Image (tube, rainbow, N blue to C red; front, side, top):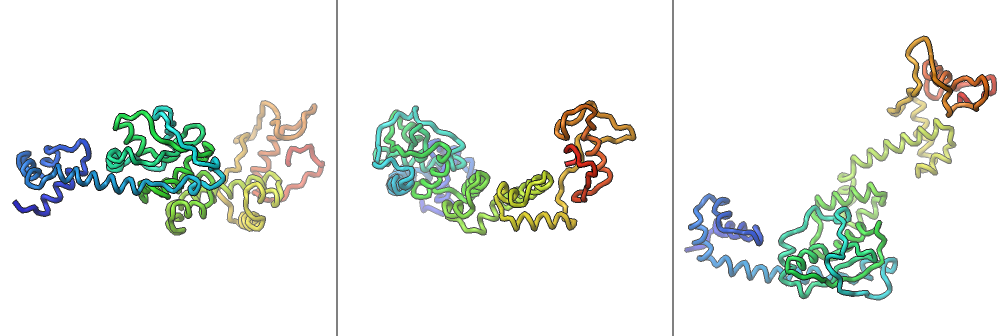
Length: 327
């Protein structure tokens, strides 16, 4: 029997099923009988080819996973000064899913590591036994029934584990897919990392990064504008606003000017004490307005008067000097 393209595709599908592969699965996929698939398997030596491919994959995996030394990956900042290697019990290692940059673990990589389990480099953990790098290696060890694994200790704070896990992955091992890189980029951006650092860490172009984070950057811009307006209405100086928001004073000046000229952002100026009828009633003066003294006028009266008869940024003059009610 001559092996055709259909036979080759059937074998590739069979191999892709991993350890749970079976002849009936292939038969269902290709709408043929189980007997026919068994015949293909014998005629084209499927089992021998699987064993040979697993060996080749194991060799490639061992070469691919050989890491850059921890000192080179993390630098002096997080390196303990010498390579600290040890045997660690696998059940003592802490795996936190939110620090894991992949969407899911890769079955083919794990199977390849199982075949090379005695030749794999140490995993990386921090002083609190949080896993930084080596999750596929841990799974491979577990599936082989091993209780201990070689580990290398690096002095990385818990809050930096996710970033360093991504950095270590970039140096070796199974690389992140484009969708996984996108998720990582968004997470790091929301965490406050500078765009330039993210692009360098993930080896992506600026345009790609901007496409991935377009909605986040738009949301961030709107929140910044809202904060500037709130601080301005609370009588902060433009210098103070710029420092709090983290932008140049010229940016604050330009935004406020645009708002005053009719480019009002969408924000709610309706007072909490809004009165809808001719008779205004308040249970007590609002503690935010004025000083506590006998005969105090509720600040809510001023609040409602300003809401109904003035527009934002209108000039309001208090001829009495005031006690703070209309500040």
